[in-house]
Image (cartoon, rainbow, N blue to C red; front, side, top):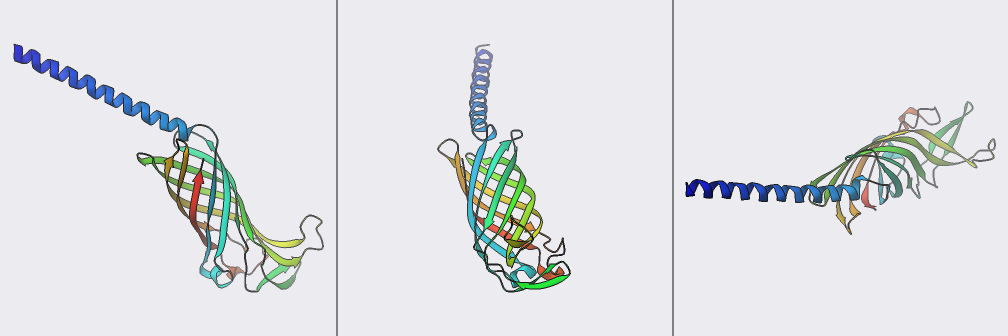
Length: 213
């Protein structure tokens, strides 16, 4: 009887201790969730714009910078609004079509994306987060061809719709800030509106570092 009582006592204490430990872990997890899952966040990125395929025959590797404003949807999903710049962008000559005329142009300014992203983030290890995101936006590449028909745009642009898929891994520090690495694949059909030839190219990679706070 004493042994049974002792066994029940040990089991009760063990169950209570385990429950308390789980509660502490849950509370700690919720605190970390409060830090990353609630409220508006902002991120900054810096890296390299890497044209691939046919696009690499016209453009070179270029510096990349960008910023995104992030709104929480739920514990795991966020909606990001941002702008990405790749500049200075230099190129070889390519054909640009305007009103049934074709001009030989170059890019010596830059290109950019204004877009929306859905970002799924989850904690894979304590303070280590894995981001997966999909984005769509407006993309353009500047040219050196003067636009005499517009008061707002001095030069013509190659405009298109931009799609991307990306991955990032980051580590949290200072309670709410995090720092990590990212890589994304972009698809931008630049010939969509007939401004450039069909063989202009449409794919590039952006990779680098990002800081989120």
